Every structure is written in C-alpha cells, then in structure tokens.
Image (cartoon, rainbow over all chains, first blue to last red; front, side, top):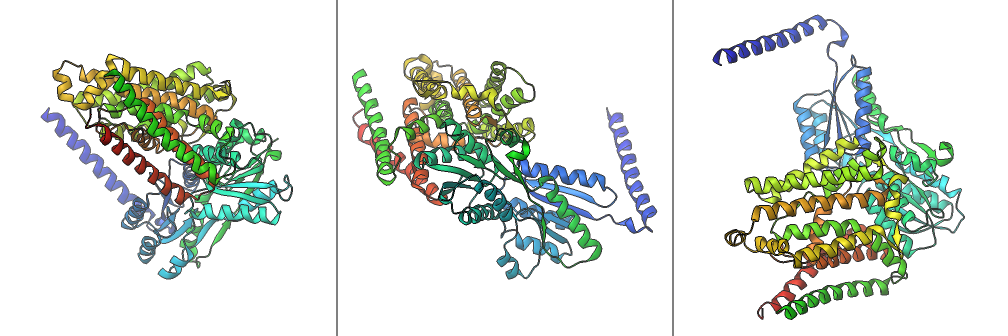
Length: 322
Length: 318
C-alpha cells in the first residue's frame, strides 16, 4: 500500500516536471517569433442554459479551433440570466488571470460597467456584445467600450414591416415584450412599434411575457379573449412566438391571427414552413461572439480607437422557407 | 361529528368561492370581455398542469414537507418526452411511459433521500431541482424541441367542449381528495404531518408514508409535463421555472398549512383557480408587468390572511 502511493508520488512528480519543463521549452522556442504571446480572450456570456448563448458559445469555440494559433479562449457563462453578481465575479476572476481581452454579454447594462472599467484600467481590452451598455453610465464613468452587435430595433422593424404587408391599415395588433428592463427587449418593442405605427396599425395592447413560452401562451390566451379582433401578435423572441401559436391553436384562431417572432431558433423552423409563424429575424447567434472576438483581436493588434460596430440581422420569412 | 366536518368543509369552499367571485366581478366590471364563456374556457384549458402539480404539493405539505423540485422535474420529464418523440421517433404511448418513469424516479429518489438520512425535504428537493434542471438542459442540448403533431392530439381531444387535460386534472383532484379523506393512507398523511413522533408511536409506517408522498409528487409532475408539452407542442428545457412556488402559493391559498397536518386537495384546486383568474384578468385589463406582480403578491397574502381568520373563527369550537 505504502509502496503504491510512493509510486504515485514519483509518477506525479515526473508529470509535473514534464509539464513545467515542456512549457518552459515551448516558451523558449517561441521566444523569438512574433506569435510568442497568443492573446488570451475571455468570453463572458449570460445563461449557457439559454439556447441563444449556447449557440453563441459553440460558434466561438468553433472559431477558436479554426484559429487556434491566433488566440486562446476562456468561455464562461452564468447560471441564471439575472445573476449579475456572479458575472461581476467572473470579470474579476478574468482580471486576476490577466487575460488580454474580455468580450462580454452583460447581464445588466448598467451594473457591469464599473467592473469593466476596472478591467480596462488594468490594461485589458473590453468589447461589449449582445446587450449594449447604458450610454449614460459609460459617460458618467468616463469609459468608452465598443459595442459589437446587431441593431435589434432595425431587425424588429424589418420583421414588422414584412407583417404589415399582410395587414390592412387600422387592423388591431398586439405586442408580446421580453423582460421589460432588458435593452434588447426595449429595442425590439420600439422596432415593432415603428413599423406598425408607420403602416397605420393599431397597437391594441403590449405586454410582457418575460421571454417565456408558457407565459406567452397564457398572456396571448387572455389577450385574444379580450380583443377578439386581433389580427397579429408580434413577439420579441421565438420562444414567446411558440407560446402565442399554442394559445391561438387552443382558441381555434391560428388561421386568422398572424404571429411573428425574433431569433430564428431551431424550434420555429417547422412552424415557419407551415406559415404558423410568418417571419422572424436571424441575428446570427453563432457569429455574435465571434464578431466581438475578432474585433477585440483587431483592437489588440492595431490599437485602434474603440468604435461601435453593427452586425447583420436577416429577415427570415415563411415564404422563403417554402 | 361527521355532519360538523362536512359543514366546515363547505364553509371552506364557500370562503374560497367568495374570493373567486370577488375577483371575477372586479375583472368583469373593468374589462369588456372577461365575463364571457371564452374566458372561462381559456382558463380551464390553461390550468391542468398547475392543478395536477398542486395536488402533489398538497400531499407533500400535509406531511409537513416541501417539494421544490416539481418545476424542474416537469422540465426534465417533458424533455425526455420531446426527445423520445422527435429524435427517437418512438410511439406516443412509449414516450409518455418514459416520461412518467422519469418523474417517478425523481420522486422516488427525493423520498429515499428524505427517509434514508432523515434529511429535510427542503434541501433534498432543492438539490433535485438543480439536478433535474441540469438534466433537462443535457437531454435537450439546451434547445427547445418542437414536437408538433405527434403530441397535439393529447390536448386536442375533448368532451363537451372541455379539453381532455382539464378532465384529467379534475379526475386527479377528485381521486386526490378521496385518497386524502377516505383512505387509511390519507389519515396516515395527516397524522405524520401533525406529529411525526406520535404517528410513529401509534404504529404508523411513517417512512413508507413519506416515501409514497414524494413518489406521487414526482409522478404527478411528470403527468403535468405531458399536458404542458402537448399544450405548447414543444419541450422547453426552461419550462416550469417557478412552478414550485406557484404551486405552493396555490396550495397555501387553499388553506393547507405549511406546518403540515392540515389541508385539502379541492381547496388547492380553488387556489390554482384564483391565481389563474387573477393572471388572466390582469392581462385582459392590460396591466403592465410590475403592477401584475404587485397585485398577485398582494392577493396571495390577503388570501392567506383571510384563511387564518377563517380558521381562528372556527377552531375554538372544535
């Protein structure tokens, strides 16, 4: 028994020596080349349990594998979309690990600003993706953090404009909002409103279903009872669009009330084909983190001044799926 | 004695019905279309999963336990159901069986942990809540599974305009109440909840009773997941978040004690109805999210306070 454990110690020591020696050797051999210090990029996301962020993470990992010689990736997420504290801790950990850049999808557009400023003060490049930091807070803290991401308002407007083509001016529509405090939820709502108002539709009611399918089902069920003349339901994400479709199906109104969503998740593909969902927007979730990482690399390489960068949002329509 | 009990139960029902009537009249007066058949059909068709979960939760609270895992178990079993139908292409009956087995297994594990080490059910089911949620994400790879027509027929089936899920929920309520007030197992549940030690000394199989209750709760969560999944025609790994608290609220509104030893399944059904009417009515009024949550919170507290007085008025005489 004792002998066994001493063998273990020897093996472990050898392994450690080999690892340390190996690393040292690697460093020495690469010392002269410009690729000596591969930048280490930390990707900090919201809930990885969310399909959207899971896709985002997978896209980032694929990109890193294809560009393994250019940078290293540390991807982290939080358990719950709203766990702001945990995300602050993650940023602090990354500062402690002395990464070269942090690409962050902040769980809160205000509360994460101070810790990101701390990171920048420590010489770390910070790039903001997905949920844009609040301009007023950035200004107040005197920092400029570039936002690389889609224009949610524009995307929502495109979806709603497509829907407007199927409606007549004066028709009643309803909006199902995301979490009322979220920046992208607000932007999507504004985009829907822009297009509906411009086309002369009447927004009969606009309520939150907190991004959730089951909640959207309940909210739309009640809405359709109160406003039987609704012609369309505009949902700020696809999960809620699925809930809206189930509510309309249960009420036997699926044929005459149109539904649009946002995000183009895999679960709505069938419904787009059946025209039960008329349109959605694809903001290329798998590319969103990649855009941010590429921009961070560019900033590290060329020391360019940070500026916002818009990434594409595509309109996906039922017609195009046929 | 028996007559007095029947009388007091009727009083209970009357109290809750009064709350319901009050809510319905408030919404009826403030909205245009609340007092229509459509509203009540909508509510009836949207509550079956909540009702079924509340029945299991009533049993758990009666034995002075708590089951925080029901929402996550619902998500996990519906995830299994969805994957069986979509990825494996299994027939509906087999997929439903698999789904129920998952719920049964989660409930059994909860029960065994509680009785095996005498652990508080709060912490055991909190652990199960995390584990089952993680399982749901794993099974679905964090993606909502669109099931489609394969499951629609469960919800589409109906009798006299009442959907099959609603009738199923009613059946669960009725059998739950019969078990509770008409069987030995029901009496044992009350005894265990009122005083575990006394129950043990009087020869009741406390551990077996507790295990059975957690198994039932898990199984009912899985049954609710079948309905949830068929209603949405999709298996969502994020399904059922917060359902445990909603179920506890409904059950407590119905007068079941968090301290155990007291409760009724039919009253829990009323509790679910009150919350559902409130939810539906607030949407129809067009209330914004913060107001909705504020009002819902207030109604829960007011209903429980009212219940407290109802019992105080009665208890000196009994």
